[in-house]
Structure formats: structure tokens, C-alpha cells
Length: 249
Image 1: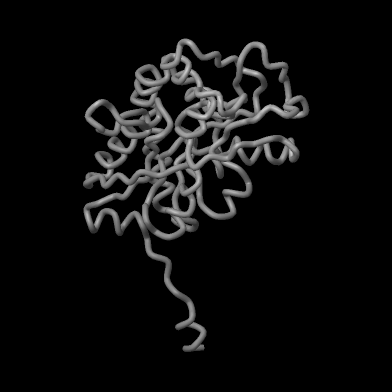
Image 2 (image 1 turned 120 degrees about the vertical axis):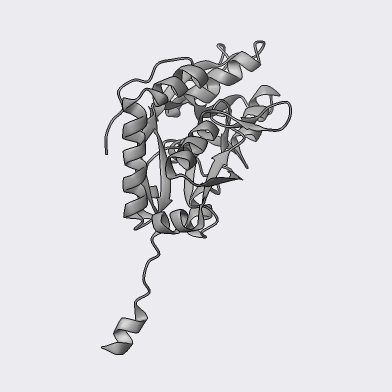
């Protein structure tokens, strides 16, 4: 019995650890404007950046931000490099087997974009068109599943995928609807016509599996920020739209 007891390792309570150390480590994107990017002085800015600052303030602790990409968001959680991921992350059953998700905090969808002349209306009509998508993201995984023979250009991050499309290395771009909206504003000479919607994909925060206390606190934070108008303010500031009603878990 003693041996069996000793073999069970107690799971650390991240919420208590954060409160005890006075520091929360949050992974954020810097390659997905308007959720995360750098301004002219290389200061991190964006929806997810400000939301991370709000989370740290709500916890009453110091914020330690770490840059992450679509491919390493989950690995950074699994290897304990961050406590929380706030990186416009969509939920899927496969991901939910590895980490825990909070309630959604932003309403977006994933789609494929391209020039008006591109005759693409569904995954089945991609043909030989080269589609740029950051590897490990929901859009890359979804296209791979729905169109296994698609010519997908898998990049290291969203910024590289966007650059590949803008410079003509790729014919199409698979990305988040809000990211495409921002890219279209930044590149008025490039067409970003929506070819087809991959799926609705609200953004969720993520934490390590079994961290129920931290997830519960973050859900409470999201609820409070919804009720006091702070999430609506972020939607209007960064996404140019009011916050629509979000689905619940």
C-alpha cells in the first residue's frame, strides 16, 4: 500500500503556485495581428496581449509573457514553459485530449482566402492551388483532413504563411477571419476574398490537463469581463466589431 501511494505523484495546483510566486507565465502570439504583433518599437500589442495583461491584473500578480506560435502552443503547456496560453486558439476534440480549454473569449471563424479570380469554393475544388497555412493550427489540420491531396504549404507560423500568400509564393491563405481582415487593411493591393469557410472557431485560453482550479478561475474572469464590458471593448478596439454572444462549454 505504501509503495502504491508513493507511486502516485500529486498534481501541482497551478492557481496556487501562481498566487504564491506572484508571477503568471502566459504564452501569446506575435505573428497574428490583431490578436498579437509588435509595434514600431517592438512592443507586443494586440487583443491577446491586452487580455493577458488583464488576466495578470485580475490575479494580482506579475505578467511574464512568452512568444508562442501555432505549432508550439500545446507543447509549451505540456513542458511547463507557460501556465496559460492566450493565442486565438480553437478547440478540437484532439486538442482537448492533451490540454484543458476555458470558455471562449472571442468569436471568429476559419476560412480560405485568395484572389477573386481563383475558382475555389470548397476543399474539393482546391485543385493544384498552393494553400499557405501555419502548421499545427486548426486551419492546417482541418484542410489536411478534408482535402488530403491538397497542396498545402506548411509554414512555421502565421506571419510566414501570410507573407507567402502576399508575395505570391502561395495561391491561397488559410487563416482566422480576423487575421485576414487585418491583413487586407495592411495590404490594400492584395485581394483577400473569402473562398470558403472551414468552420466557426471561437478563441479559447488553454491550460495543462487537470488544472481545474485555474480553468475555473479563468472561466470566472471571462464571465466577469463579459459582464462589465471589457471583452466588448477589446472586440471594438482590435476587431472593429462588438462582441457577439459566445457559445458555452
